[in-house]
Image (tube, rainbow, N blue to C red; front, top):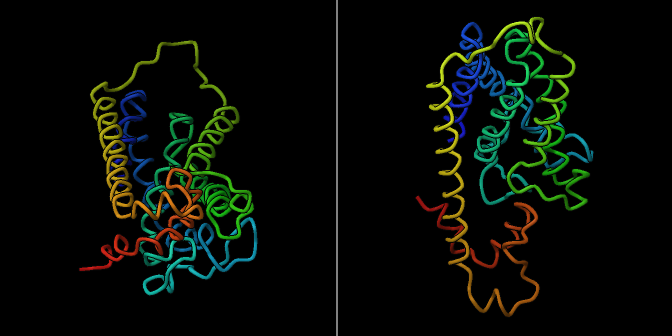
Length: 256
């Protein structure tokens, strides 16, 4: 669903931009997605989600080029293969640079934006993801809560957008002429895609949560004090700790 949200974000930006910059914004979002897919495959995933690194800031190169991911599981979420976990996390990694692209609309060319996007994903996004989600990440050890990417995605992208807007500066002709958006239709289509797909993703997550709760034994939840509440889960790591108490649900995912 996030893969479809990326062109939706591009259409949203294209509709808000001027006519001469509309296609540039759409192409930048789509090309950024393609570039981040390559970056994530080559070294992005292993930097962000390596489970063998002793560093508290950055991962090692164990999973570089997604080696040894088909038949291994990450310590963070051992119930699924590494390859599936890498694909899932790729969706967030690919759309996050698109959140700050709008801050430099019409003021940065495509090639410099793509180069900056690769460097930003490597040294900002991947490092932040490892710090928050990594087994030995320094924020992870401090029990930092990040259920839907609020720190790794939105906080980093928002701060980057502010910094880019300040560094690049105003347009040369800002305040000297009137600006008009290129296509309100693009804005509506992009907004509809983003809204519908985001709420669909949220609904699916709620369905999965309800299935998890339904699979839990009533007495196990209310009589065993050692079992953590589902509403207080800190990360995927605690969810995996719960899987030992209700294997029936997790085993259903492995059945053909």
